[in-house]
Length: 263
Image 1 (spheres, one colour):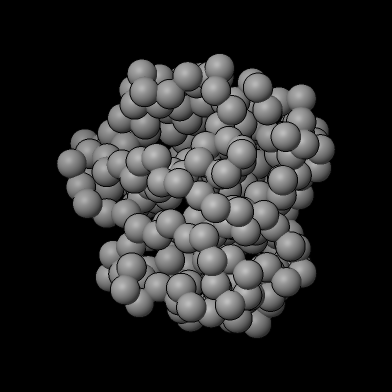
Image 2 (cartoon, rainbow, N blue to C red):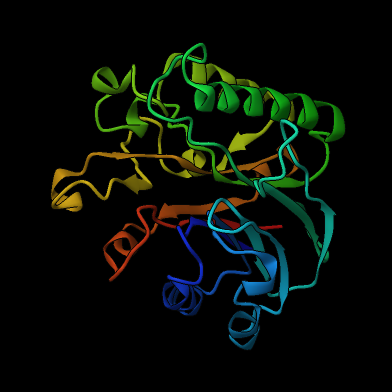
């Protein structure tokens, strides 16, 4: 099974890129975040015509939004709202004959890493705490599950271009990394990408639009993740970030992340 996660930053604007990715990478499951589309305007038809007729979508106008596209039939298991907000940041589905897939879009957290003065950062920490509690009580590490998405945290020193310079920058602060570690421990999640790409190796999935030449500057962060529970650990066969997609015309600022699993 090949699963891809991608923060697309507007699925309607970048539908040609989604179709290109589906054609070139031939995934079995594609999880999108930041689709920025209500369900009734999501490009269901073109994606179905391309071979991905099984779709689970949660959306809102102009912000957030997540979707699971699959070649195989899927059954929705839960699309949970967190922190008392209806903001389309999670969907989950069981793949026919396969694992349950959770697709998350964790809040970015604003610019100031202080929950006392930044409500967005406080919301991010609350969201992660609720994720930890919910996954730890409602999901078992004994069950085959995959968790993917833009988790908006780069946990390792090699997940950012400069650990020292980003220690006080939202997405790499110690308090966020600690919160993400607790989410990961909640159901024994294993970082599938780092099972293949050694933790000592630098790896990014996001590069800011602000850089004049994003590739040359290479000031990236690994914000997009694929985790699996222990029953799937032995089946991890391949993982990579499709860096070239960041350079496609009208690209998202995120690159797709691909993991191949032997189920």
